[in-house]
Image (cartoon, rainbow, N blue to C red):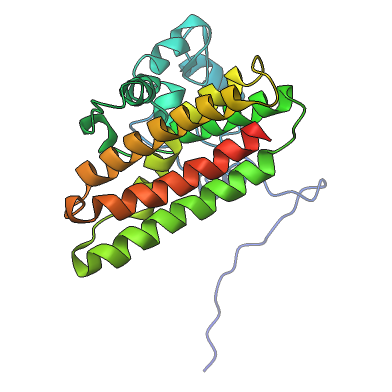
Length: 250
């Protein structure tokens, strides 16, 4: 037997929209803005927020999105290290090492334990500039000879010392470079010396012996077992600085 159900009629208004009054308004969802990420609760800076009004309201006066503008940001650079220190260049240490070479009879090897290449590069550039004033463009020759000379001293010493040799290439390059100071001074003095004669050769020999004594004393003091082979190390250093003096004489 069929049952009859009472169904209330559905009435649509003339505009085609459902009625906005009564219980229907409670069933509608409030539309939300698209692409609205959640905001962190502990931050006052809106991240990727489209609400520009709230961002301007939360930022204090004299700031943009919570970042201070003007002289307040300069306080962050007070704790920064100097640029030269960040690059590993210490002018005070370079000056101490150069000053220790000025006395060939009493070289302070303690300041050369921390080897660097900033001072040698400065001396190489000074040597090249003084040669340039003499009409000789020899920057490439100087750089190439320095590399070969450092490797030469490194190989000679470690072959002599054997397994007990502890001279590394970085320290060897630093010592050879800093001991170029007498040759740099010779190159500067050669601008005022006669171009030929016994005087030029005699002064060059003095500066070569100066550089040889300084480099030999540093190498023997910085490594173990250098006293046993001091004569051969002196001979190798003498050949190196004699070669550089020839650039100045001729």
